[in-house]
Amino acid sequence: MLLRAIFGNLWCLWYVLADDLPCRLRVAHCIVGHVRTFWQESVYQSIADVLVARASPFHCADFFYVLGMSSNLDTFKGGVYDYNETLLWNTAWKVLPPTKYLLEPPPPTGPRHTSYHQPDCLFQCAHMFDKVRLCLELVRQYERETGQRYAWIVRSRPDLQWAAETEMPSLEELSNSSIYTAITRNYIQDSICKDPVQIVPRGFAEDIFDRILDTCLLRRDLEGEIWNCDTWIQRFCDSRHIPITLLRLIAMIHRLPSIKDNFFDYHDQWYQHVRFAQQLLPDSIFILGNEDEGFSKKDMKWSNFTTSIPAALEPQEGCITVADSQFCMPVNAYLIHLRFAINTSAIYKLKAIHFGLWRTYPRNIQNLGTQQSKFRKNASHFWFRIWFPEVHAELLNGVNANEIQDAPFHYNLWTPVLLRRGDCIFWTSCASKEVSNLRFPDRRRHLLSESRVLAFPSGTLPAAPQMRHTAGPFHAVQPRHHSAAFTLIKQVSLV
Image (cartoon, rainbow, N blue to C red; front, side, top):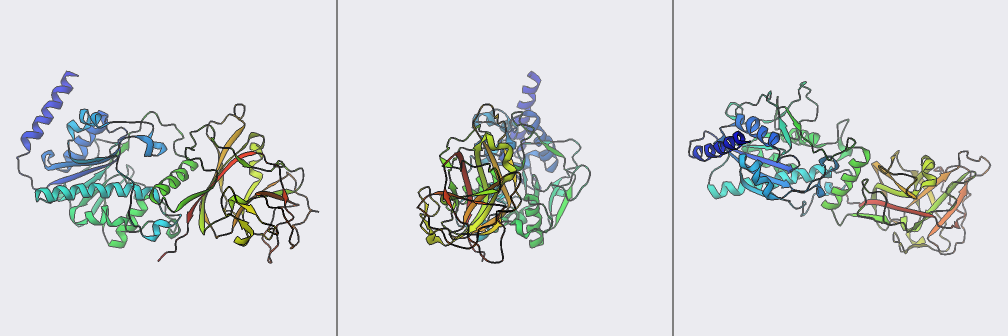
């Protein structure tokens, strides 16, 4: 401990004395992300010894930070933590002192290109890139204050532990006609390696750290490529004719012990996608049904079980289709996420539950898409359109059917479904054996009493006919405990 303290003091003394030495080029290090393990000596010392010291003389480097200090806005793979600024000053910032910094940056705001209003925008990367943009602005501010311009900007993550075998050349040896990213240990060029580190000549900084946010990467535009931040960077550089050179930069993400082994599963991806979309477009994201904002897969159960479900969830024969008027669309929007909590007696029957799009005229529903909405009389003129794309249902992690009555599960739609005003989300459950002698109802109208939850029987799953067929006859049903929420993003036409 004594030797470590002496070494730390000598390092700081050298940094002060060397400040007056001449520099052939100056480097701005943008360290951006969530703090996570940055305060641990093995992490920040590796950044100093490998990334910083090999790029330029230490006194020619300045450090700019945009950091999240708690796990509240982090992803599941970040672990659980809540830090304060004092911790940084007592650990990492003793070795890598900040020139300028921003802690707990706000979410992105302001006008957005219409691509950011699409359900397949890569929202998570947009948040990350915006933090890098904020760091670039800190660099610009300092350049204006000092009248000096950096030759290079190195963007890296705070939780990377750098390996000694990294082949990091001096920036004086690199051409400023290319940007530089990492290649993996096995020299696999198409692996995920551009996201954590970018070494950028100052002349490309506005492109790579700012203009990259002009439009969002849409999943629909990809042709066999991975929908991630690396692809966004690669596609943007291709569009701007910015060369990318790969270096043998070897680092590993040093994670906190508080994360679980299954920290990144199917549900986590979409949960984060929806959460980042809500932060970026609070006026475009809305939820039909019982919104429970505190819900995540870490919770044991939802706090809200007020919706209804038919008592005949498990029909003895044939199928039952459920119509709940609060699941009818008030505007044109894309369905991107389904959440259900349902009685555990039905848990092992979940694969027999199918969600579909049914169409009617908005005039047939009073108070579209609210908990007060009801079907009007003569409102049975619904026709089946499509079943939703193949989705994965995940039970909430850690649910014990012996301890709780209602267990949540999730439907994550990788292919968003566009619903227009008046479209409704109905769902159908079938017995283990469908009945062939019960047919899909003929096209006719049925008088209904005003009600919110209705159901109708059929022999088999509804299928989209060549001509419209109505969904009746409906019957009012006895409610049964469940909670449901459908997350949607309003449709905005691309320019």
